[in-house]
Length: 118
Image (cartoon, rainbow, N blue to C red; front, side):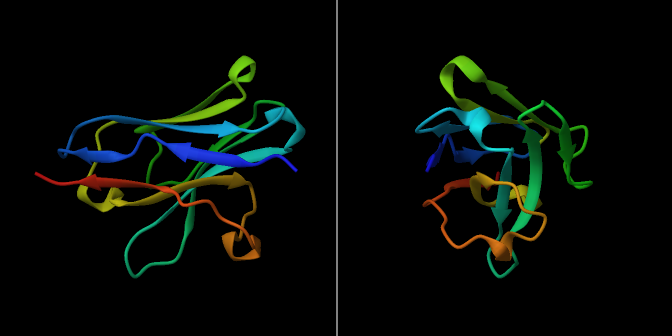
């Protein structure tokens, strides 16, 4: 089973940018779709962006135009470029296989904290 490990979080000011990385332990295209999720304090985990093995991409409405999901197949890595960050983007970000309902996923990595604050 391919494992995914996320990194790249940090503290950034509103309007700033950050890039998250999700590295797969094996061939990332063996996973039909990889997604970035986030969970803010006191809120449910939600899908932020997803990319299929064929390259099809979807975004949550709240991040469209600001976030970009991409991948480097040679590095078995999926990225999340986040621009024009807002306070409400503050959350723990995770990558995992894509499910429309994150509650269906049993196993999660530690995630990476993104804090948007002045």
